[in-house]
Length: 214
Ligand SMILES: O=c1ccn([C@@H]2O[C@H](COP(=O)(O)O)[C@@H](O)[C@H]2O)c(=O)[nH]1
Image (tube, rainbow, N blue to C red; front, side, top):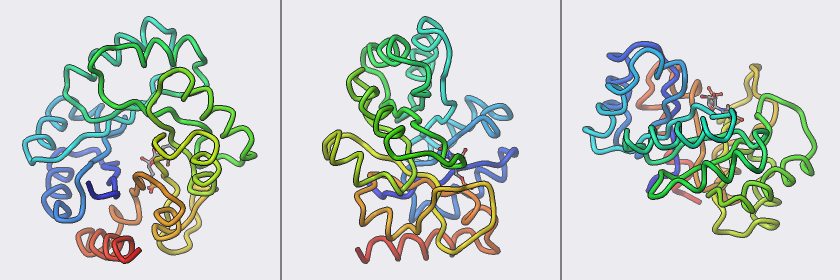
């Protein structure tokens, strides 16, 4: 499976559909977060799946264990490939999410890539998630090596904060796609560098080209 996940952070079904069509040669998994899900919910998930692609539902569940368990069950009914919970929800919440049978892959957010933190905090949360039966974590590309070392190669590391070129935006812990893939990222999540490009398909192609060389 291609390692690029395109974050469909748009609030328009037609725009999302056009982006999927234009980039489908380079992307197998599309991320749907609150921006798009609040507009198009089930329809967007269906459109992506009907295009033969997978959905990463990034709603970062962070609630009491019973509510998170039922949210994971609902996401399972939608047929998504993976979803996120927030590690700050704690052990009981993470275990409740992981215990749902035949569920999508669950990835726990460690510390948001827009926040400055110390690697020890990310590792502490990654280890907690692993102990609770979660499949992997969302972290910045700066922590990939350390997480793989501490939690094992099989534990998924998914990294937003990917910038092919230097930008001045809200992402604080960043690297290029090439470096993230070399470090061992299982997937890299990219939004604005593709969404805001003059030609999103060309931007996706160029990032794809840069990572398959490695
Ligand atoms: O720690 C996190 C967790 C999630 N994200 C999400 O990834 C994309 C990144 O988009 P860019 O435009 O490439 O910055 C976005 O949907 C975030 O909600 C994250 O960035 N960091």
